Length: 320
Image (cartoon, rainbow, N blue to C red; front, top):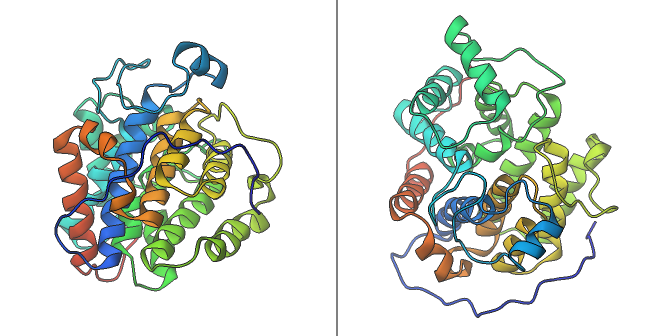
């Protein structure tokens, strides 16, 4: 189901870079993590603006400039990237995806006073502090995008393993803050899509098998009708905006420019689209100007963690 929208013309050619020789799936995994950070930093500038406000205030938003409602420095990232890094660090420290370790990592992240934190995440982490239970109570109201935005470390850690392990691992981390069927379905879809692209699968097959199944199982996610502009933090809005931009474009740059100029929760739609586009196109696809703009320490952590998660085998997952 391809969404037919106006594609944004690229303003500059992508430059190919030389660097360490990695197996193709590792290169794509690193690109996915860098793409997440790039999309986060790009989208944060226009978070909570409408498309009309973006057009009037900026024109076409296509550079990482900082600012926005959080008044970020250029290249600074938000909770999308920093929570992912916290989760990835916990996975590497424990050797598997563990709910308790994830909850403790997220709690430490919150105590460090992140630049931004979602209400659902804050509420359920406070509950974890009180009870010690790393699994939030199932709630139909917790269908935000906070678990999906940090799903990448699970996709990398579980690459090459049975899908059942990816599902168990996804729910172990997601349910710390978002115990919700729509959130679960979105997280698992994104994880499988990233893994498919790491394996070099064709985008048409991935769309049909993964996005198609999501819509078949949960028709509310259908993304082939109305253009999703100004997407909220509701996971359905997020996935619709990301899928429309991702499947209607053919380069990393076009995909991210398309999605962040829709405004709304643009740091998260940018991060998720960047994750998918990085996995699809590889490191050479990410514009140099964006890579240079992102905080260097953050970029290094993303690259190193992606390589570690993919090159260090992660044994069976646990959900306790």
